[in-house]
Amino acid sequence: MSKYKYTPKTKKELIELIEDESIYLGDIDTKYITDMSYLFAGCTRKDFSGIETWNTSNVENMSHMFANCEFFNQDISGWDVGNVVVMVSMFYNCTAFNQPLGDWDVSNVVDMKGMFHKCTSFNQNISKWNTSNVEDMAYMFWGCQAFNQDISSWNINCVEIIEDMLENCPIDNSNKPKNLKKLSV
Image 1: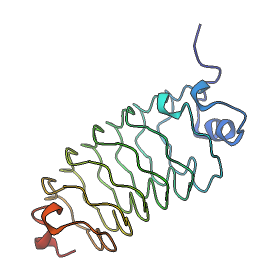
Image 2 (image 1 turned 180 degrees about the vertical axis):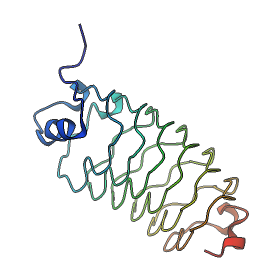
Image 3 (image 1 turned 180 degrees about the horizontal axis):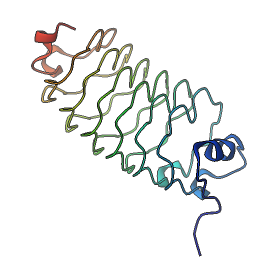
Image 4 (image 1 turned 45 degrees about the vertical axis):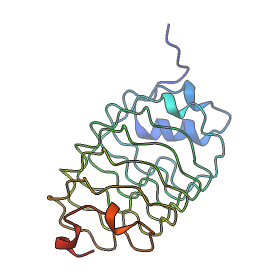
């Protein structure tokens, strides 16, 4: 017998479940979901408990997943994001979000545009991220008023678009990716 009460087969079914705030997110088995884009975008939900147990191993798209979720600050450090290709604006304007993501495998991600855009509280160590396949980092940390972590070891050789990556972000020059100047932020 499954420990889950719900096993949605489609993104639409999953959205119907998460819109019902009486449903505990930990009761949802997400193993069939490959697209979580815009899942919680603009939601007013305050209780995200249980989301940390979600099976995200098949997900390829997390674009705008939590965009404008001002209350989101759940620990999702244990998520398997190894198949994710798109993380565009995943945490856009999540002003409360400040959870560890340093152990995430982002080696397949190609697009991180605006991933933490306006995440005013975010300041976690993500120095070990493998960013060697990322092509777009534009606005990634734009307006991250607290972010000052060392990302100097990031491989950004494939990055083609890096416009305003660190705009309005207090990061020290020594913490910026080493070859960033070549791309002119």
